[in-house]
Length: 431
Image (tube, rainbow, N blue to C red; front, side, top):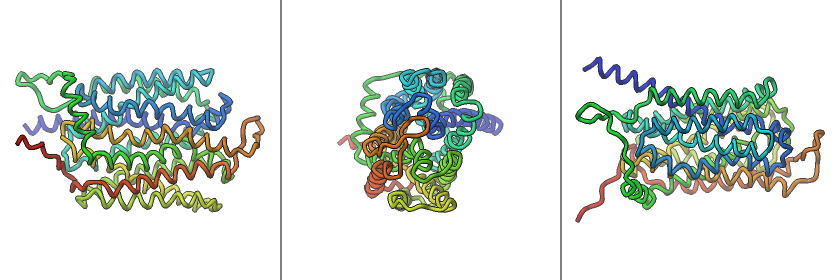
């Protein structure tokens, strides 16, 4: 029996590594436009608003897919969904890397978003099924730490690779890696621990009535929505800034070189990744969710005042602010635990996907809206290549949008229901 338990743990951990590797690709694809924003603008001769649309296409489809993904992983399990997602994501990455027009790039980016949109919820489902409930936030923190390696790679390393080998070659290579990971998920990942009496794995069955009843139960639960609003405010501003506008902002508004600006983004993602583990562990250790969320989201919202002030920071100070923002941004990662713990355990995929929609919806709206605000305030300057040159004043309206969005997340944190790190959902009385 001991040998069987050891073997099962080994298989579980191997499968987790593969799932996390797929999540790394997802994070890389999410934030890659930040590292190659200037390359994309040059390749497709785009304005700021068009560049925002290109980057945000990922978020549009990702947002739409969150609830369906929750339904699919609860019904069919993460194994099949990860395989299909990897195939679609690989096709999108290949098309994006070979795109000769902005329209082709938009289609490729859409397919990338469609493919990788299933990864995170699949990871949460895998953790919920295979690991103890009391370790959920800590394990999600570990997953985010590993996944954020992709966002770190999308900063300075991608910028360097794009200048060395070309950004197109990078995305063709990522397509090959995605396809290999999909095959590995099919071979190594298992959807659940329980078996039928005959010893076989219970086959998934899509019961439309059960699925939509479960989804309605999650949506009608008022305790679900504060977590979604925190996600919208904190992760939405994070996705818009770190996912696209941080590097151009630092280059054009603060006069940094491209490599220095990209390294700021890598520092942001690294500090966020490390803090994800700390936030989850701190919450699990305290046995509380709400206090950590309230403090973290409020301090995060306040950091945006630094950029709104327009003050010129010395290099060490700007790095320090990016570290602080990364650490405080990590507070929103508790929202998935909060949503899961106020809904039925069997609906963990749906509850976390509904919560996750908030951040990606905000990212989808804010990235092009930021660019639109910049174009609206554009002073008319042109770069040496003939493209638009933006100033610090052009960026102010966009930065204000992100600051207000972050404030929404902070306000929503007061509405979180404290779960004491355990599932508090109770079945409705039959009387």
